[in-house]
Amino acid sequence: MKLPKIIIREEFEKLFAEASKMKAKAKLEKKKRINQYMISMILGFEAGMRISEIVGYKDKVPVLQKSQIEDESIRVISGKGGKDRIVPRPRRLNQKAVNELPLIVNRRSIQRFITSLGEKVLNKKITFHTLRHGFGSHLAGSNRPLHEIQMLMGHSRLDTTGIYLHVNPKQAVEGARDVF
Image 1 (cartoon, one colour):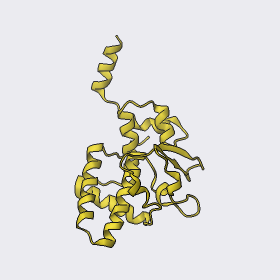
Image 2: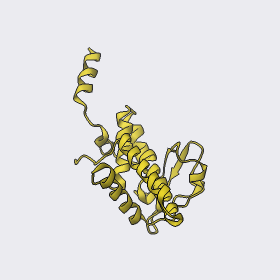
Image 3: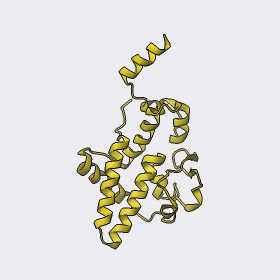
């Protein structure tokens, strides 16, 4: 299985900071659009949501609504196998951001924004899905149980979730020594 392209938290923060600068310099209409991109970035990286779960996809997946946001969680309506799931509500998804929902932004424009931001800030070719992979990888790196990550990502198979377990040889050796 091919390893996913990921970004780490520090890289996400650089992307988010650059988007904030762009928003601050933008004229009113573009400012609103960048704000919506930033909300989608938070949902992708800090809640592991797919782009289609945020802005909808044809008749298969509805756009994320305010009613799906709870105090601590988000009820995600997925088009993947028709399985709904619960994900954590990012701390940065404050009430002001929730009031922006539903996002009225084109999925392709979000994709272009993320790709160009990645090239500009990180000198990396990334997609929106890279943010989701970053979420899964960050959870795995924080030693969350694999079945929890599976549930949050909405994977039906555990081996799909297993791609987020990046083997760190030094950590593996230290862990083995601790056992003996």
